[in-house]
Length: 111
Image 1 (cartoon, rainbow, N blue to C red):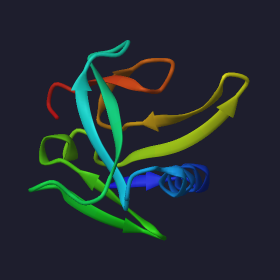
Image 2: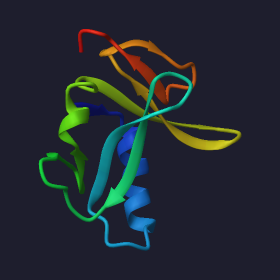
Image 3: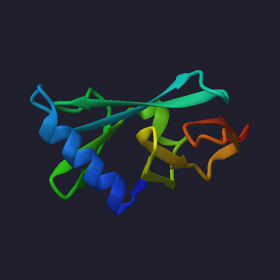
């Protein structure tokens, strides 16, 4: 479903370890907004919501809601650090166009 780079997996693990909540993974959803039509929303959560796809990685899980799954199939997730800090960057093959920041996209009309 999602391809995580080593940097992305490490950033997720660190976020879970530092979390004040009892988190076991990252929930990925899409919401309206961003520079393009849709943007990724990431939340540390304890468990999957009903209907979520669950993908287990080394030490954590990724939970993807059903409405999001087809729109992000094959997406590569990286974590990039720069002078402003760090952020996740998404390369989505299902996108018709993407924002230069790598955080939002316009889905292909046939997706």
